[in-house]
Image 1: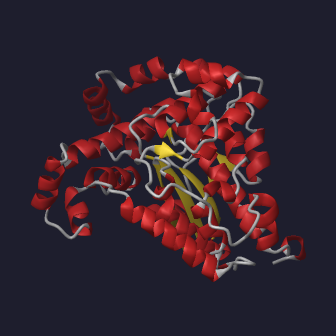
Image 2: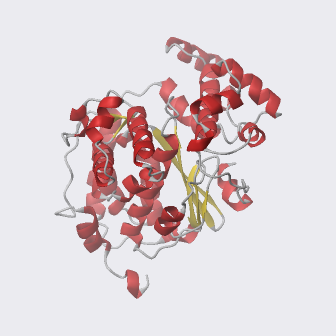
Length: 388
């Protein structure tokens, strides 16, 4: 570490995260809530940010039909999709297109609870991010996080997988801002990103994004991701306590063991990531789960669904998000979803929604609410490779 970042992680955690004792295990519910709910700290951060922007959060909460008690700090989890609608409505009413960014900047290691404690006491940055990748479900974020590595480049990705597309882009930028804040707490404020990828159109004023991330920000991308030098993963975390890490990991594993996830939700998460890698094949999933395809089909049927329905749902969800939040054209979106041509994508989307992609975009995301049109630069091969 340079002298400018020589402050120990333990002291940074004391000032940045707000933990009174670096060895404290925070109290969390013994039984995790259902997948699709987000941690209460996010809801409080949204509420405070809206107040600071001059909005009345209570009016907005009532408008979308949420229980105001979800925001009283009592620990109740907020539905992921509902919070997305609140963030989207707040961004529209306040005229602040980077509301998600502002919310994410408030995050600290402590606000991640047990997961933040586990990350803060991991041996290296790579171990911390792999812990986040492995155990993010304990936070019930309604999204899948991933860490891809290719030679000298590392990519941290965030993919919402809930059925509601509204607010997905704002959730994504919030999550990337959260991860950036956490990495700065662990590595020192001067660590550098190579670039940031966001699945949203660029706002008229993109300066807040560049100012916060301190790196090139590329809009109209197929996924949300932080791209940084892979060597960062080897950096040791100063002040990490192995005993605290083991205790936090043990608590997390107990919570996960008590959580009764089903095959349908597991596949929703898997397919949401794989839909951009052209790997949504039942045979591949069956091999990964060490069962034959007929067994996979039988288990899904018992849960009231089929593999084809889930694969179509994943494609439809991503299509809605890209149509809603980006200025990608139909050719680009159809390519992301691995359709042979735009006409095939249009036919499938009409079957899913009852209308063409262009009509759906016009109805759900008027042009005046989108950012200025951007040249859709392709993602460099070195940043795409980890996901192929």
